[in-house]
Image 1 (spheres, rainbow, N blue to C red):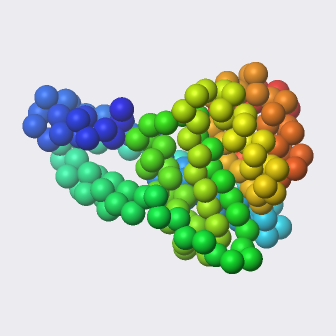
Image 2 (image 1 turned 90 degrees about the vertical axis):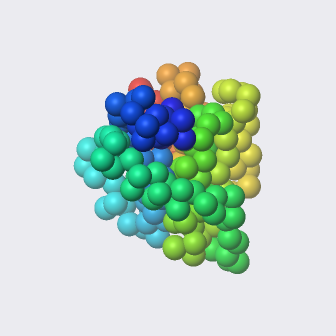
Length: 179
């Protein structure tokens, strides 16, 4: 994958020319930041276009060491979300299980610590039914907001609309094509 260790090692030794990486860490961090602002009543964090661009980055031999070091630093504490009593709770639901989403999880957790809010990252291992169950469980628990990367946006419109009717909801990577 984009920033997989084998890919980065290949760039270092010259067997891979380069890679273009997304920024899953910032996907997670910005999701919590935006959900928290929406929870606080600040709808101005959503641009008129309803699209927040988190730019991709080219990784080549001249910047692979710096990128890899930064990535390791950001992900070294993943899996250690803190709990804040009487503070809002936000969830990030990925579209599967992958190292990409583990990096996003690190961003979710750091944002939670920085903002003093509770966070949870869920990665559905069993497809759409698993993701649907996770979202329904989060709604039943009364979370204050959910960021989700829908597995099948076209066929999850009803689920996403139901979730949006009950909590703050922001899509990652893709949105349902129709409201």
